[in-house]
Amino acid sequence: MKITFLGTGVAIPQPGRVQSGMIIEIDSKPILFDCGGGVLNRIFESSYNHTDIDTIVLSHLHLDHVADVLCLIKANWLCDKTDVTIYGPKGTQQWISSLFEVYGYMQGKVDINVIEVAAGEVFAPDGVNCEITCASGVHSVPSLGYRIESGGATVVYSGDTEPCDTIMGLCGVDGVDGVGGVGGVGGVDVLVHECSFPIGFEVTNHTTPDMLASYIGEHCREINVNRLYLTHLYPHMQGHERESVEFLQQYFKGGARVAFDLLEIEV
Ligand SMILES: [Zn+2]
Ligand SMILES: [Zn+2]
Image (cartoon, rainbow, N blue to C red; front, side):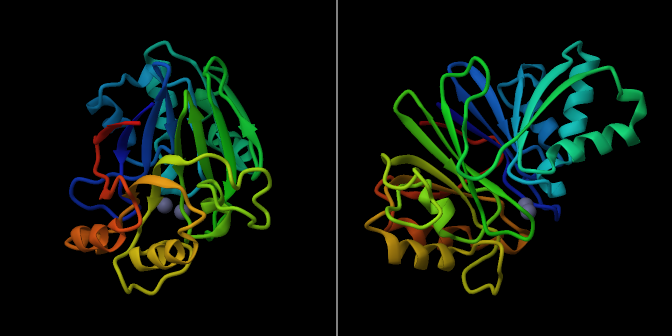
């Protein structure tokens, strides 16, 4: 697998970081996870073409994760690519239908297959040899995190959340209620976890390095993650990147890093 971070920022603009989005490439197929504002242009700047995107997986419907979905669909349509499958939480079908009501000129031009998924479900996009497991985050709206396994490699993407049992259950926490069959499975190569605010910032529904460290500190024997990448940084995080990484480094054999737009990593 290969991860390309497209957008590592949030709803508030800042230099160098557009809103949320990343591509996970499996067997030469790019799967787009979230597609906030600026992500379409980042796809252009990456090693991918926007017309290569057949599958979009949404963590939740906040604007900073979906604002460029319709822009991507339109760009593809203009380039004669008219089909896409969108996975997302409950409400995704209604959201996309509402968009097409507003933008009537797009109706009938494109073929969009929406598949709503829920915590505990496992799915695989057509023609992609992988297993994607869903779990609920703790956020202000329903939000999903995903565990993506293929060819012996595993990545977990937290979506927007505070550190919680359900998302960490995707990382191999045993015996946690509500995790279903997920807990206790094999280790995770890369955890992409949101880290919205710096150490000491008072917040709920999002994560700070100290919140994540204290969760992992309590559960470190059950969490099996090699490398951590932090994403979804508010502008408040500027200048706090190094201390955040130093704070979390000790828990990850393969180290902790702050992701940046267009960073590519092999898994
Ligand atoms: Zn959100
Ligand atoms: Zn967000």
